[in-house]
Length: 77
Image 1 (cartoon, rainbow, N blue to C red):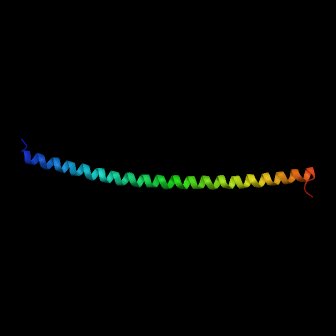
Image 2 (image 1 turned 30 degrees about the horizontal axis):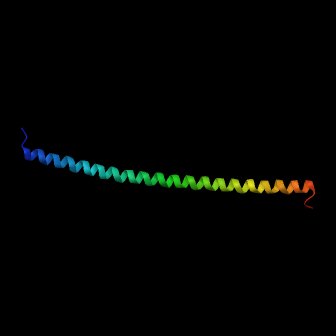
Image 3 (image 1 turned 60 degrees about the vertical axis):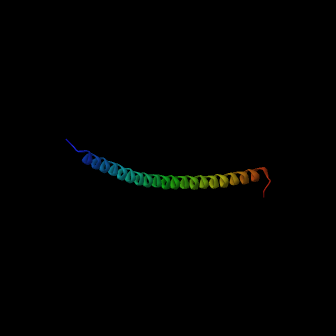
C-alpha cells in the first residue's frame, strides 16, 4: 500500500507535467495562430493586389471603350 507522502509526490509530479504540457501546447498553439495569421494576411494582401490589378485593368478597358465610343459618335477627333 502506498503511503500518503508518495501519493502526494506523484500528484505534484502529475500536476507539474500537466502544467508543462499545457504551457508547451499553449506556445505551440500561439505559433500556429501566428502562422495562420501571417498566411491569412499574405492571402488577403495577394487577393487585394489581384483585385486592384483587376480594377485597374477594367478601368483601363472601360476608358478605352469610352474613348472608342466617343470616336464613333464623333465626340473626339
